[in-house]
Each structure stands twice: as structure tokens, then as C-alpha cells.
Amino acid sequence: MSDPRLEPERLLGAYRWGAFPMGNPRTNEVEFYAADPRAVLPLETFRTPRGARRKLDRGLFTVSVNRAFEAVMRGCAVDRGGDNESWITESMIDAFVALHRLGHAHSVETWRDGRLVGGVYGVAIGAAFFGESMFSRLDDGGSDASSAALSCLVERLLDRGFTLFDCQYANEHTERLGAIEINEREYLDQLAAAVDAPVDFGVVV
Image (cartoon, rainbow, N blue to C red; front, side):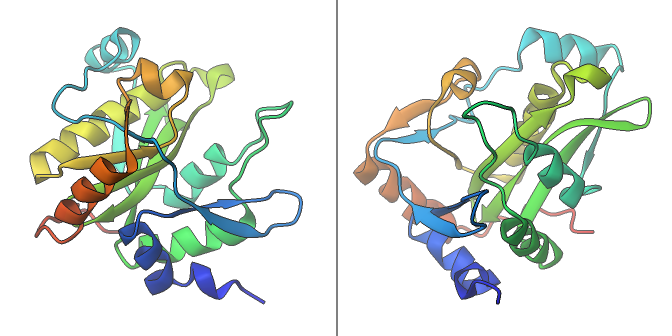
């Protein structure tokens, strides 16, 4: 039986209230969390990492939007080994693919020589983008591919008028990309202002 909490309207409602889902890969069960402090990526001060910028400038990567949403999710869901098990379960993939088809979840893909080598995906509500996960296939020429996808995503968000990029938790990778932590009250204030803004991510396929 599918989890009713992952139905589109209830899932979107959770994001509006500041909660996000994470799955248990062993049980396929999903729980909702709210982090305090919360990690956000300031859009206006984001700078593309040099390696990704060089490869984009040289045309080594081709970037697309919403061309391969499920494939990006499955790329993000690959276990990294050790304690770094994926929290993206099959039930979450089903739920987010449904959100994507309804125009609420989006992906940015990085390609090299016609192969998907990286990407990032998340959920858009109003002027808020909830970044869920990103991946690179390093053994397939995808070094810097996730950073390239993120850079193009940030450019799009700025162009469309987004004001909040939610990263959920800070880690070494997101901090290198410019993520900062803010307290729960500040996050909820920013969230409330963003989710009802008349902003549209666009490019629904």
C-alpha cells in the first residue's frame, strides 16, 4: 500500500510547513524531518566552482532541464558505500515522479557525449526551491557535473525570481558551494514569504 503522506498535495503541504521526507533504504518507510539550524544556499552570492565553470565554458557538458527527471533521481539514489546509504527509496521516487508530472518537481541534467553524467533535482513552490539531491558519475567523465547542473539551476532560479534555496542540512560539500545555516525562525520567515510568491519555475515536460 502506498504511503498517503507521499500523495502530491500532502507532500507539498509538508514542504510549505518546513518539513521534508527521507526514506529508510532497509524498510522503504519514509519519515518527515525539520532541521534547526537549516541550511540554505544564498542565490545572489552563489559562485560557480572553477572546475565546473571551465568545463561549461569549454562545452564539455551539455545541460538540460526536466529532460530526465527519474534518471536523475535514480542517479542520486545510488549508494555511496559505507554508512552513506541512500535515503531515496522506491516509494520516494514514485512520489517525486508524480510531483514532476504535475509540474512541482524539477531536474537539471548534465550530459557528456550524450551520456547522463550528473544532475540535481528538487521541488519548487512559489519562490522557494527545495534542493533534494545531486550526483556526478565520476567514472564516466562526470567530474564537476553536479556542480555544473547546480550552477545552471541557480541561474534559472535567479532569472525566474526565486528567493529561497533550501538545502536542508549543511555538509562539507554544500558548504563548499556556499551553503550557510540559519535558525528555524529565520528560515520559516523566509519560507512563508517565498511559498506564496507568484513565481513559476517553468519548463514542464
